[in-house]
Length: 100
Image (cartoon, rainbow, N blue to C red; front, side):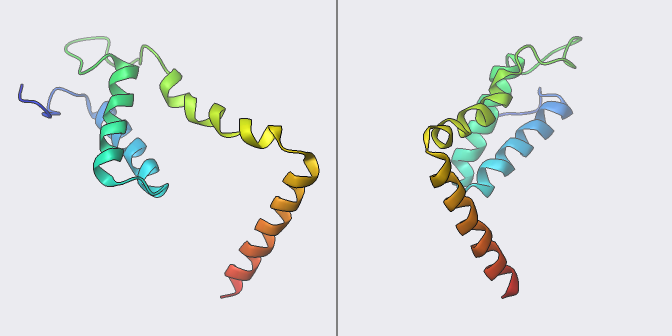
């Protein structure tokens, strides 16, 4: 199998990698880097391309769940008043942009 060949991956793994890649691209990550991160995540979850039976269940789901856990830590350290002011400002911005 040549390097970069994805023919041995299941349809579920390919779809999963595409979804992860799309999420990173929405955040502004360059396409090549997003693709690299997506396949690294799929490989970490599944242990690489699968052959035969047992490919329907990921071995380790932690890489897929990691992003959400990391996201709130910085905000939790901020004072409540600061978080509230930021949320109000964001709401005003969304309302202003919705009108345009």
